[in-house]
Amino acid sequence: MNAGIVVAGAGQAGFQLAASLRESGFKDPITLVGDEAALPYQRPPLSKAYLAGKTDQEGLFLRPPGFFAEHAISHRPGLRAVAIDRAERRLQLSDGDSLPYDHLVLATGARNRPLPVPGADLEGVRQLRGLADADALKADIAAARAVVVVGAGFIGLEFAAVAAARGLAVTVIEAAERPMARAVSAVMGDFFRGTQEALGVRFAFGAGVTVILGRDGRATGVALADGRELPADLVLVGIGVLPNGDLAAEAGLPAENGVQVDAFLGTPDPAISAIGDCARFPTPFARGLTADDTVRIESVQNAIDQGRCLAARLVGKPAAYGALPWFWSDQGPHKLQIAGLSGPGDDSVVRGSGNAFSVFRFRDGRLSAVESVDRAGDHMIARRLLAAGTPLTPDQAADPGFDLKALALQRP
Image 1 (cartoon, rainbow, N blue to C red):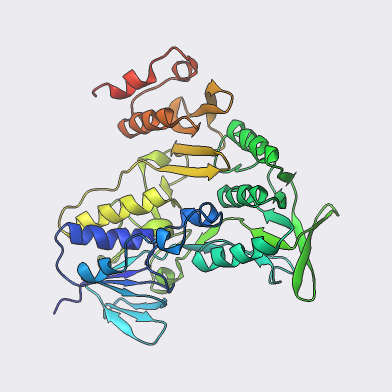
Image 2 (image 1 turned 120 degrees about the horizontal axis):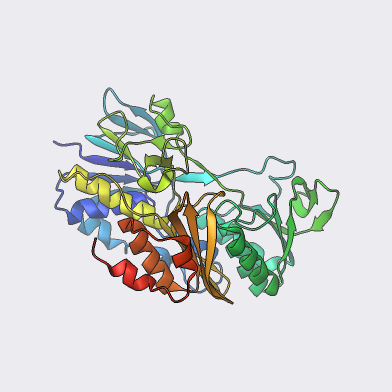
């Protein structure tokens, strides 16, 4: 009997792979191993709609419970993959069981980066990665008065907006000099600083946390390197993530800053592939951005696209992964959409004004990314331009009379 495909990880990427395999007519066994008890679910709403009470747990599920039985997908919840026996092609699980595989897919995702300061283990200090984290935060928000968010990235700012809307006093601490400094342009970062401040959120930039203060085992505040102390009965830490590559590394596979894969999402072991947040892969959109043109992308769309791409290869229709990276974030009343990959040295050209505008980024004179706030049309045009490699100059992007849509619709 065929061992089939075993997927270590039941998040967006792992689920998409399994669903796409069945859609493509794959008949052999498929087993999803996930370390959470819940059915595969969406993570983005956790910091927004779920915390705000606009959707419930059932609304997060990627598919209803019956889907897995109907499509003969075995879901093994609440288990971790702990070791890979590459010689025997078996995956060891945390309950002592092991699963044989014809092909193993690592979709192990990422974990929150810990805050390495005293007091980080106090009650009331939270991180947000999974459903259990969001449920704990829901309870904390209901009882909290003062909130400190450590890290002004996407998750931190999304949470800050939700907490501020609940009437809580919110302060965001950020080591850089502006929000989302590694992800967006200075223009966009400054805009979202302003929108957060309009909600009542306060910022401390260029600041480092030295201690989480506490009393009777519970957080009471945050001490900064400059001597300031901020009161807080809830502290959210959002300082980035680390890829879950240990399983691959311990099996002898390259896994520095993510499991290294080739253009077809395969590892050096032909029986093992990797997708999603844990995978570091080559892409033409990273040219000039990284030394080896590889990146690791934490986004829903990347997880979906890689799941589909790998499924096609596993049913005999291989194609190099070349999907355009794109992202979104709901920041209070505004929607931020990003197409492409930008770097800190990329030039910026602004198109539009007020609360609805786009920032076109250029690297070595070529369009590298477009950041749009409340301009969905610009975002869709940008995706077409970047995916097709259509030339666009900074002067054209800056000219409000230049017809971007016509350029995007041109046939190559």
